[in-house]
Length: 295
Length: 295
Image 1 (tube, rainbow over the protein chains, first blue to last red):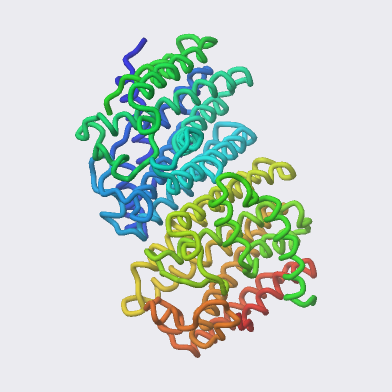
Image 2: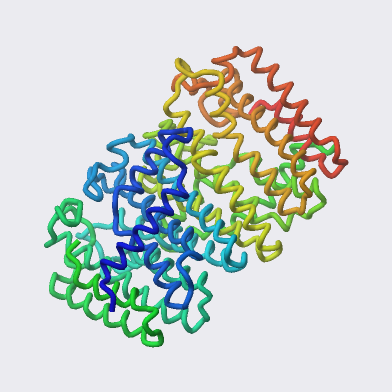
């Protein structure tokens, strides 16, 4: 199996080049909004969501080039959600990916607008996929993304998150937050890569199971790293969840149970890939890697 | 020519019913986000943008039912932009459409999220139009809307607006703000109604000229009403632009020149409709009505 980090680095390079190509340059008027968009988008980040779009497309035998604009769209939506999450009215974070957050550099108003513009541009990029993919498939992807990012997906998870705290959250609510705030977009990334790649329904079902297990495992690992991680590696303060009284898996279940849950979800994710061969190696190694990552 | 307000009222009824049908009910989990979305969406408003979508479709001989989801999408995007515009970090307004603004009722975080969810849902609704319209046309509309709402459209206009004030704004910058903050979405509403309605390129060009003139006239009338309007009719405080040192037409050109500009733009808009007959009466009466409205 190829080394996951090495493969991710290759994908990151492709994605960063495509992003640079698809996002208006900072010199385009109004300069400040494009600067703010690029500042947050190009601040680093693992590019996991776009890599999953590519990985899912490859699992069903499709070339990465066909899904590149949609892959970039997922990074735009992820970045928009981070910019807004960091706002004073939300989590009020000063650092993200090791750099001052968007609103610390450009002010709150411009940060809100930069997030909005990234979200909007995401749909424009997906629509661009129609150059190489049948229009019906592109529209299906647009519906998937809109549902995953909307009031019953990402935004729904954020809404429940801000009215919940570690003191009042039930296990059901915690799972809702995790499955929606992080899970929905990861799930959609895998599904949309598969749909654009021409997956049949059986393949799509298997990849959805993979993505749901990976997504929850991913968020639990994030929670665990916030308790016992190294802030220089994860690029933000350790202990911020506890400080903000965030609902987290370790807070509700304890650290040991959280770690066991990650192992179980990872096994489920790998099992869901049984019907695929070598062409799904990236997805397989992503699941293993997540379970053992320290950033 | 039918009475504009009577016709608008009929369209509003259709649009409000469709919105009620297409937006998740407040009882759907997470309730608070759906409540906040519905609160701002159902707080009144002229429903001008969706009515223009319908009017443009009718001008090219298409039934309103075919464009109803996209018409609603325009109202969602308009409402999202108002919710975010009213935030403390932006214009900091307490009242909108005669009611407390979204963040005054639901808090800043929920207002940001409600705006985001409305924007996202708009793209979901447009994609729904594929039930009755060829997928290629729907994708074209999605691209039009994304550009009109994005960093070189609505959001671009807002970005320039917040860094400008009546003291430092040039005529060029003022026109940029107006053409983008308000104009881009009105223009897209007309164009998308026409595209979904099956307009040929000649019709689309004429309707675009109509929309660009109407859009700028509409914003100048808004500026004028902020100087000399009746706050009980327009649903927000009079003089707020001056208080906020907003760049406005009357501030830059004087009231009289602003009023003359409205007349000239309205004539241009009417002239652009010359090639159409009775089927464009709604668009025609909209332009006349705008020039004389007091709310």
